[in-house]
Image (spheres, rainbow, N blue to C red):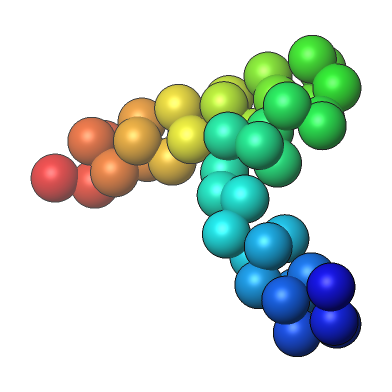
Length: 45
């Protein structure tokens, strides 16, 4: 496997595979950032 093929493989892993590598606390932190963003969006209207 050459370096380009390896880079393509890592790039195609997507969000779920990357999320599995994160700790539970970090996943929750990211989810809460999304919730907060939606809350701010709702207030602006």
